[in-house]
Image (cartoon, rainbow over all chains, first blue to last red; front, side):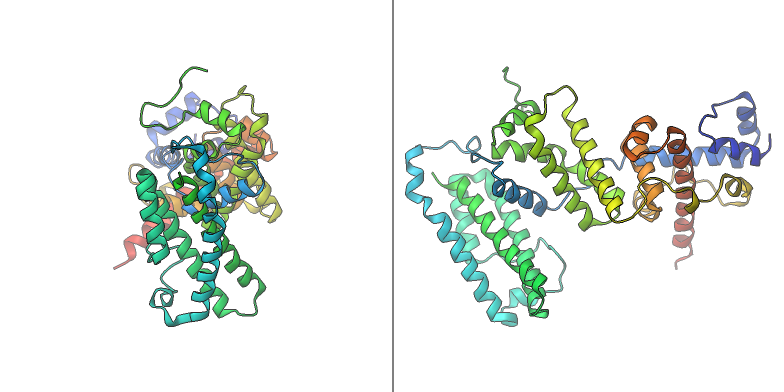
Length: 206
Length: 200
């Protein structure tokens, strides 16, 4: 069997290991190398399964969609034992207020444009996790830490991610003031930030 | 229901999370997402070779799953159900974009051309020295049709009959294209290695 014949047999799906092929492999190191390489590629490829981590924003988007579609019908009470169920409504007003404050805060920052050093660093990378936290964020995290310390790190990561998203959206809107897509992108970013606040309060309120 | 919780902390078991998700429990959805996000996202990333598209498809796959979770009866493994759904979401997207999810014979070299190459004329073998990053880049550089078959078989572990069912080709075609994909990858890896060696 020649190398050409051996390689042709390799491409044929139903070809099994025959004596002739085995004999060729034993006597031909280039073909043996070829078979070894193909096996090594296949083995190495298996190690790529589940090797990548999606951005935290993916879960944020999924959770927002699930809430909007009404698929989430109850909050994550299993994480945080509620002290009294009746205490919740007393602080429930904070949710819409927090959302409104965030939108106003975002618009204010948007209008201030490049004067804020935090928002001047627009080119430092999409969805960069290294983003300053606003005072509101710090207060929220303090509240989360008091109520549910285990959630603090996750909420902080979400806030940093969503702040990066807001920052990119604001930059995009500034650069393209007449672009409707950029404006929608910005609104979506504010909505997502609002949602992170809502979720954090949801987990933190008694 | 028996207590099927995992030993560490208060995390839900998958079975428990599925039942709670059917009731609309937010924590259960999140737990299921975290259990499977890496595999689904990696699958989407390998098949599209695009981070943004992979994130969108991951989101779409999980949303489809969560919308249908009420119909899950447990006859098949949940992970099998989810990953098949993710594959279908990706394949649908590739078809929408006009990219060939089924290998196109005309875009590939023929068996004859492949056989004409002189293996002995090529440089040293790759085995034992395949860099993960180079492999990832080479997979991303594969034509979409090759990439689909290779990722489904060699990365995700699907059998040829399953691939044939998923992408709508014959089992023989799947086997044949897998071989060609591996050959193409070998070539890409060697080129990548040669370029790396040529750099000062």
